[in-house]
Image (cartoon, rainbow, N blue to C red; front, side, top):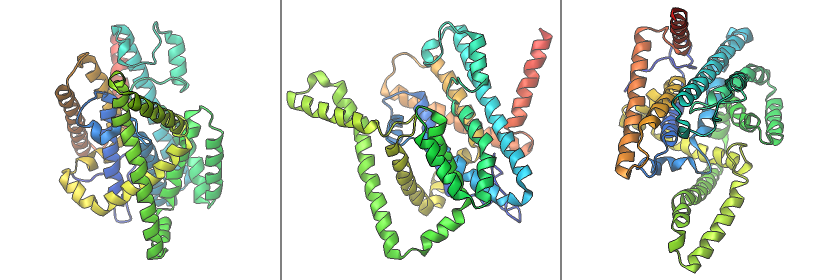
Length: 402
């Protein structure tokens, strides 16, 4: 099991003992691995059966957003005695790190792809590139490109986070909840307004985690049992349907010409119903079905992991914990891995080759994270902000030398 250390947003208890909840880090570690597999995009492969190819009614991205907000609420409640000035500074420092990382990666990927004429690697970059327009749009958070595109959106949420946290800390949680719901209802096609409800909802739950846990335990055992069974039943049915869409309906559509007339009608009806369902489960705008199912599925996953967290941590040899506790580094590093791999993946691959390629990508991610943790244990000042400074210093030196 890897040595536990202070994470990018870790908290320390009164005696310096970590108060992090193991389950959250394990879940976040798993979600980050799922995100990597999804971004490599090499179906069919063995790992797809655990990831749903990123096409289920709920994806790993929602969980990553929610857990980030939840840990912000949980961590900074423990630090509230340090004052709001401290909290504003810490949150805005993190927002700056996210902003710099997102903008730098977007421009770096765009520049390399444009210069090497590899536009096919990822859609979204105009050809030819109007660099003045692209740079301006990137710096104003109106354009992102690559596989770490959530960094800029996280930056926006972290800029607003101290204001939201202040209201929560003053007991104005109803204002926060109402404001988040209203913003979500007015979201239109705006990603941030749609997804803020997950981040802010996570912050609310993280701040009141102890109270919510106590409230749950105060319920009658029979009431808790009914709620558990209901949530589990809804999860089982909706997950099975969503899974069948990815792995059964997609096969029916791909073999359309070989289907009999009766199967044609069945497939058409299923496609029609599925299209209707997805209008309410849209990922970009956080449709109501996706939002509701996220909290239902998420509660089942948390309950399952919480009962087995020590066993899971031992069986995975601490890998999920390692990934989850170094989430910002892992998210940035995974985008670099995906970018490099997509340069060398052949146009046509077999299932065996897909498995080998994705396995190698996962191994590189895990190995790189171990190295990062080792570096931080020997040089505690080595963090994301330090690495940014080092990169900019080296880049400036090269520019001056030229």
